[in-house]
Image 1: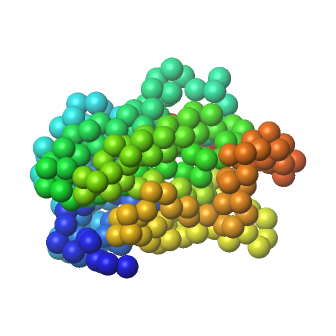
Image 2: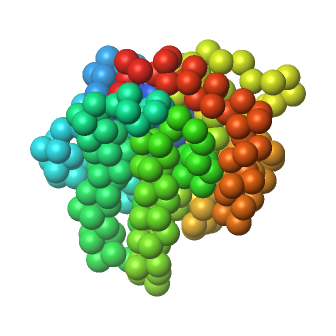
Length: 267
């Protein structure tokens, strides 16, 4: 794996959460300067104290369209964008208010698109750069009780794939990362739901490794999930009804209901 990150400036959104912090650590360890954004100033200060140098904290709320518009100028030169920030969208559609739907769309899909639109031209002009979009296995595998979240993650996958085709040959790469549930951090950890014995979830560091692999190997898509879930995601592309039926039998709807209840306050 070549080190394409040494000396680069990487803008990481959602850097105050467990996944974002792991990604920031991974990029920093590869020699990048991390421009870390998030809503919580105290968490950004903690990250800065941990990394010590080559870290620039920027408080930003990606649900605020004016702050999204201002962020590229505040960040300065950006060689790598890691669009990681996301809101949980668990719950049946009728449980969402119109404002909650708009907020999920703004943070999970609109902000990554707008940041890419603002940052990509300078990367193309320099002939180098990378855009990383942290989607979810929900971007390949629809599940009950996640219609809003799944819509944003399917959208992010399609956006990344088309943008990668548009930028082919420009020197600017595009990667989409597809984590499943992640242990010890992220939205799943907030639910405190136990999975069946023997199911090993990836760790935040595994997601960071996937991000780095996407950048340094210029991979279009990288899955970060147990084998069974990766197989299910592949089957969903050719037999969605069968996979949905199997998921229902395995209790996916009940898990979704419990997750929605645990995550309701974070919409």
